[in-house]
Length: 131
Image 1 (cartoon, helix red, strand yellow):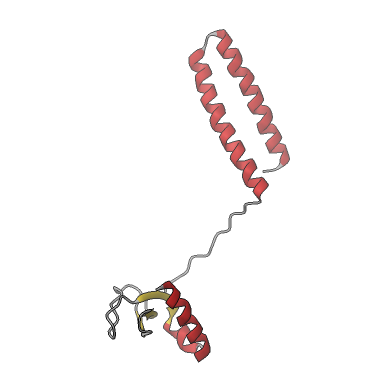
Image 2 (cartoon, helix red, strand yellow):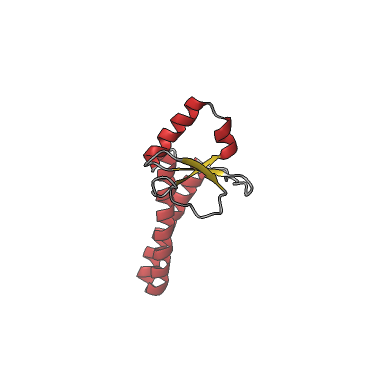
């Protein structure tokens, strides 16, 4: 938010506080209570927006990853090092060698096949930490 909006919000909250005090003195307690609730909600939103601004938070939207249905994705066994591939909608099976549950990765078979042997080994090591 810009500084002018923050100042306008602060002034509005002060005026609302004076209005609550006036309504309480006038004996309109129900209306004063409703205005107090509104003031509390407005104040909470004001504080949160100021804190976000002070901390420098930025909202970054990540692009959605599209999974190709005809593409096959790598499966890895952290116990014995077996690698295989499978379509993404299928249930992840157990390892045909040792029987442990395979790790479903987001690496496509075509991408894995295009890698050099050193890159494949490095990727398998990272999968070993996940499994």
